[in-house]
Amino acid sequence: MTVYRHGRWWWYDFVINGARIRERTAAATRDEALHIEALRKAETSSTRCTMDPSKAHQSFRNFANGEFGTWCAVEHRARISTYARYMRSVKVLSVYFADQSLRSINAGRVEQFKMWRSQQKRKHARDGHFVTPAAVNRDLAVLRILFNYAMRLEIVNKNPVAQVRFFREKQNCMRVVSAEEEEQYLAAAAPLLKHVAILMLDTGMRPGEIYKLRKDDIDLTLRAVFVRSGKTANATRHIPLTERTYQVLAHRVEDAKTEWLFPCPFDSSLPVLDVRKAHDGAVRRAKISPPFRLYDLRHTALTRMAMAGIDLPTLKELAGHSQIQMTMRYVHPTPEHKRRAIEKFEHFRADDSNSIIKLRIRASLTSSPTDAAFAEREIAQQR
Image (cartoon, rainbow, N blue to C red; front, side, top):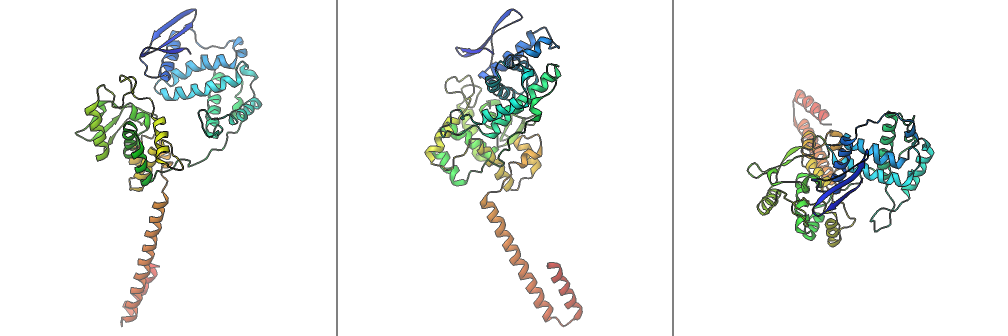
């Protein structure tokens, strides 16, 4: 995969079937350029992946970056982010397995890779922490998909990853940002980051969905934003705007000089790629401890919506989830919300006790046996 940027455009340059192909893409990012390159290779190749005895001994690196990479590009042509995620794992796997043949890789070697990967330092991590169990599991999942594909091509007879247990991952690692933290964070954020954060907090949109917003996606009359595409098949949706998000987007639409509402600072013809560095800086300046991730703002929005009483089917549509089980993962009451729930429970019990006392007084004062019996039945029902 040889892609490079020349001027403002991304190009690919590769040789297939003895012919060199060098063309310019319309990609805005390197991941998109890699995806387009893989699709172009699939279109150019005139031979299908049929059983070939020599393929059984080809190196892992060649198969992963060749046939498997091309298959991933075609399989996930509508989901560039998924393809990019697979290729990041392929890069790590190719470093470890390198020139080993596919048939020589067994469950034992996969276990060794799991241990090796878990002891690597996280890239760009200042705290010196190791790669998380979740990251190791994502690499193992791609390795499993790769061997399943090789089995369909009859290159290998079994999948060695099937015998390997994945790491147990931490559950509910995301947290809800408090109102005080939100105020401190927005005060320390740069204008671009502040607008992205407000949209995430009030709509629950994913960061990538916000980056790619165009002027045509905003309906200021109906006060709604249209999400063209995203992570899931249900990501395409309309989201009503709060007053705060309406003001942000109206300002963005008025000041937009290109089709993008959040243009790249270095090239306005492209959307902004990421604001994580700005986010990390804002969290440090705001002195928020423990720090939170940018994606936790989406988690915060969906949790607040659930606590506000929005039903789960509606919350699922607003979030752009394919399954309601995924929406349930975002619903975690905060300590303040739990405390208010207990206070309501205490008031309920107090009111319940008062009603029983009133019924007892009524039963003691009545002179009619029928009324007294009726009062006792009401007391029993209250209990």
